[in-house]
Image (tube, rainbow, N blue to C red; front, side, top):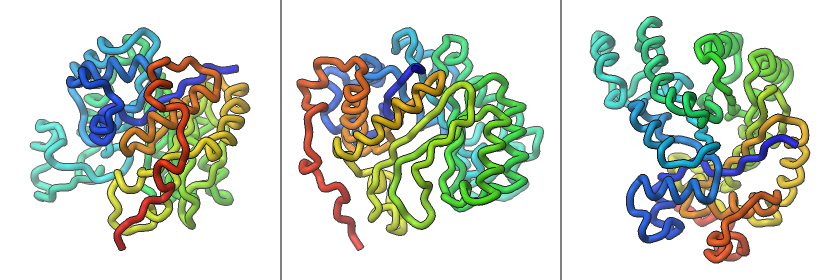
Length: 323
C-alpha cells in the first residue's frame, strides 16, 4: 500500500479561523499552522494562485511544521490561463507591459514569452525552500472550466513539464468534456506521457461538471479533491467561493470513497486525499472522519471537539440560497 495523506485545501481560510476549530491561544499565523500540522500531515496552499509569495514565506512554513509534512501548492493563476489582478503581478514585470493597456486584469497574452519565463522562475524560487527541505508535495494546475482540452493546451502541458523539472504535477479537469471521447483519451494520454497526475474529484453532478472517474496517470502517485455537493450554489450565477463550498459530507457519503481510496492506495506510491469544502470547519471535520475511517492516527483532541462523531442533520446538505 502506498503512503496515504489526508488534509485540507487551506489552513488560513477566514471561515475556518472563525469557526472555533483553532484553540483560543492560536491567534497568530504561526500558531495556527503549528496547530494544523499537529492534526494533519499535508495541506494545500491556495494563496499562491492569487499572488507569488516571497521565499521567506516558504521558509516560515517549513519552520512551523514537522519533518515529513508536505505542502501542495496551487499554481499562480497566470499559468493556468486565468486572469490575474494587476496589483499582484511582480512590479518589475508590470513595468514591462504598461504599453499593453491599463486593465485591472491581465492574461498570459499580455506578457512577452521571455518575461513569462522570468515570472515562472520567480514562482519556482518562491517554493524552492519547500523543495530543499523535502516538504514539497504536488503542484496543482486548475484550468478554467470554460476552456476545452485542445492541441494547444496539450502543447502547453508539454512546456509546463519542460520548465518544472522534477516537480510532481497534478492537473484537475474542471469541465466534463475533458474526459469525453477522443479528447479524453488524448488528455489522459498526455498526462501519462508527462508523468502528471490526474486529479479525481467529488463535486456536484451537473451537465458540465466532472464525473467521479479515477484514472491513474503518474508513477509518483495520485490526488483526489472533495469539493462538496452543493449543486444549488454551483448552478447559481455569481455564487461566491464560500457559498459554493458550503457542504458538509455525511459519513454515508464518504464511506464509498473510503473503499476507493484504499483500492487506489494499493496501486500507487502515494495518495493525497484533500478536502476543499472550505466553509467553517467542514473540511477539517470531513478530513478527520476520513483519517479515522482509513485507520490513520487521529489526535485525541479532535475526538473531544466532536470532529469524528457528527450527523449530517447538524447542517442542511444544500443550504438555502437567495434567488
